[in-house]
Image 1 (spheres, rainbow, N blue to C red):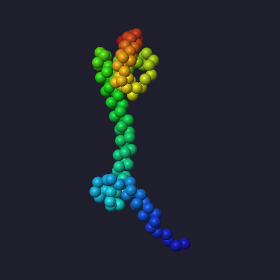
Image 2: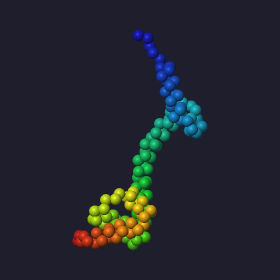
Image 3: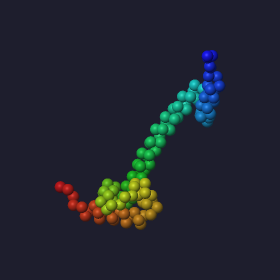
Length: 124
């Protein structure tokens, strides 16, 4: 059986990789070796930063809820615990949206949380 060289397949692979590297700065978009490294590294950063984005958004929601709670004279931890005791199952994303867009509803949630947390006696 004759030996097969990867002429066409290799050319297609390089063309595909260089296409993915379009828009990269300088040599990273033109030369095969640098482009390959740049594309692989970009993929690693993209994977990592998809996870980081989730963390950053949760932190933002918590900051918003904390600020809204402080404006109403309570703390974030007491508010969240009170909501849990009251049986309110809104996630942090929705709570932060309510805090920003509907302050009257958030006032109601705060009063419910404070009332529920005071109804449960503190453990000694």
